[in-house]
Length: 54
Image (cartoon, rainbow, N blue to C red; front, side, top):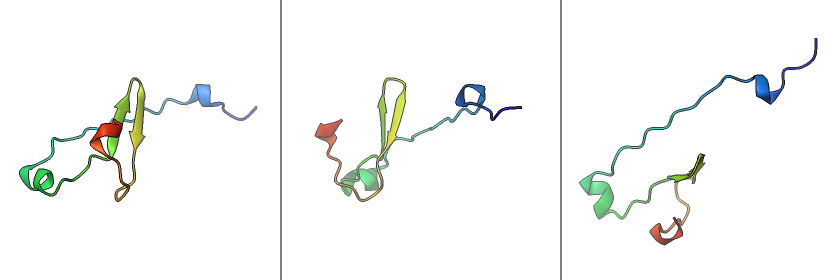
């Protein structure tokens, strides 16, 4: 028996992002989740991600 390949994996991950609340908007909080086609990108909290870079 060989090692299982990535093709044998059945793991699916779902990410649900809620809209920002009033306080988060007032504090100019940035969303750490970015969706690009079939790819999800997580930006660590505290990075300087501007809304223009999305």
